Image (tube, rainbow, N blue to C red; front, side, top):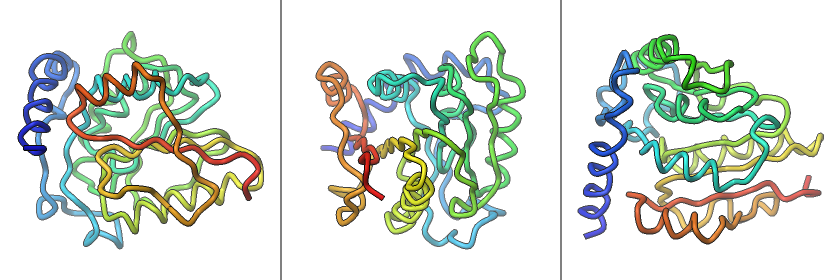
Amino acid sequence: MRHIRAMSLYHTHCHLWDRKFEEFERFATRGTVFPEELSPVNSAHADLTYEYGPSPRLVVEWLLDALKVDFGQYSFVDIGSGRGRVLLTAAGKPFKQVHGVEFCSVLHDQASSNIAGYPDEHLQCRDVRSILCDALDYDVPEGNCVLYFYNPFDIRLVERVVTKFLDSAAGNGDRIIVIYYNSKVSKLLPADRRLAFRRLPGLSRLKLKLLSPHPVQVYERVAGEA
């Protein structure tokens, strides 16, 4: 029943909202790409990856708005960014920069083409790019960061990436917010005291509970924890 509900909501988002943006996309961002189709890849962890599927745009917008932060003080990084839908949605906010990390060269090329052809009037962030590399090889940007995962690969690799961001922020007090969409675990990094659940506003929680195809967990780096 959970799967049927999720697929029903996913298709509702697709038909009522997401397809409206396809006229701006050189490569349609909808659809699923399975692991055996994700080649060639630029990663030593290809065996840990899951299928690619795009996040519903409205869900991403709800999540970003629910953070209640000054976007201009944050970078946004999507790990496993695929064809770039989340990047273009996030770039509708005035982030300092919006980066996507993608290990599949075909999806990276399609995302780069989508970014290049997207109308400027729909973007508030001008530094938007897809970066072809293994997630663990990505250079963590300086300053505060919103880190986004749509369950791109095994939890062991997710936690290693998050730990890399936390380690980078440890010496300078940067804020790290982690959005983990469609998580398969009850808690991310349970033994790491540097990361705590972040409670979203009540209305946002209600919208996500009723209208999001998948559950979401939001975390934040605990101030003062090295």
